Amino acid sequence: MTIKGKAYIAGIYEHPTRKADEQTLAQLHAESAMGALADAHLTKDDVDGYFCAGDAPGLGGLSMADYMGLKLRHVDTTDIRDMLARNLENDRWDEVASRCLTCGNCTLVCPTCFCTSVEDHTSLAGDEAERTREWDSCYSVDYSYIHGGSIRPSGRSRYRQWLTHKFGTWYDQFGSSGCVGCGRCIAWCPVGIDVTEELAAIRASEETADGHD
Image (cartoon, rainbow, N blue to C red; front, side):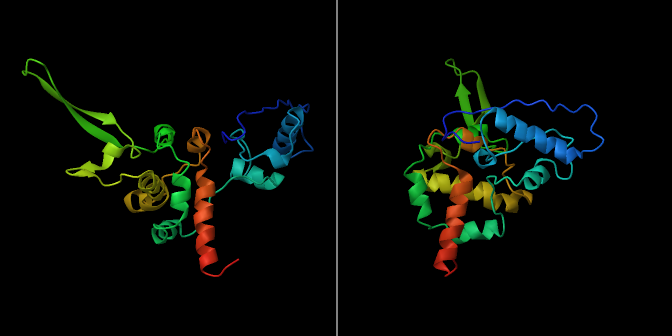
């Protein structure tokens, strides 16, 4: 689930067992996954995301990842809203802004982003007018424009707005996180920015400042 590798490698494996009285469903899922990895000449250490059929036991993919001992990309959501609110001036915002192109790809592919703008159009004759709501992105300078200019003129401020809203103030609006864990923002970022890495870095810098290892 990252663009950093520049390619995706897929393995194919069909489990040979047709009647598995002696094997659990978890075992069959695990053996199929390991067979697919072997077919692709990969190991468990190469896996950063895992998807499986809906009949997987327990919590599905999450339970199977734990069962197989996979080390997957994840986000520590402990106190995440307040953690982000405490770190609005963290140096990490400058670091990620130096890489971010503010292209808006992440907002385009995110299934929960809903920013829009309102546009007015008048005919040349002046006898018709219409107002439409159009897709927009908080990465656009004009999105936060008010009389006198944009209130988020820098890439730093726009990336911070997007991340803190998605993982922080979304809880204030809807009582849950704005991230569904699909990984699309990571996959479609042209410079390979990984939100899980950014959130972990912010948390780690705060813990270091507090004297924790």
